[in-house]
Length: 174
Image: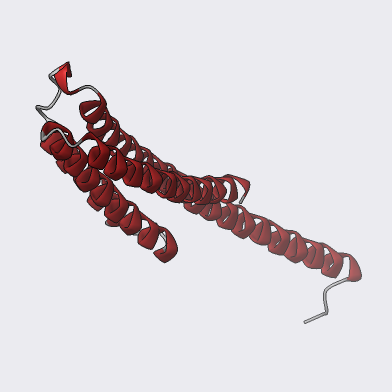
């Protein structure tokens, strides 16, 4: 048996190198496709979390706006439905807290927002009661405490929103 010629060795060597390059290219394409799927899922999940945060934020603002309106204008006739709005805000917050993509610091902030909302609602209800009893000075004092709580609530919501926006930017940049 004779040894293959140099020409045949070169052809076989180049064929093997070409096959190896082709296999590496295909493996690279599969890896890129898998990474693309992961990124797509991550971006979609981040967007969904953002939507949940927005729904919770809107529900909280609606509850507090209605409570303040009831305090300022008792004759508007919008007292009905306040409890159900509060329940909606609570359910939106619970829905957000169940999201596995929510970070622990954001989760703590969402809980804190719920606590602040409850305090503000109670203060506004107490202020309405004082107003109804004719004690306008006490009503104004308690309403001012509720307004101070609103500043803290808005600050917490702003931090949550910035955190979510940063996460969305990272997900889309990745």
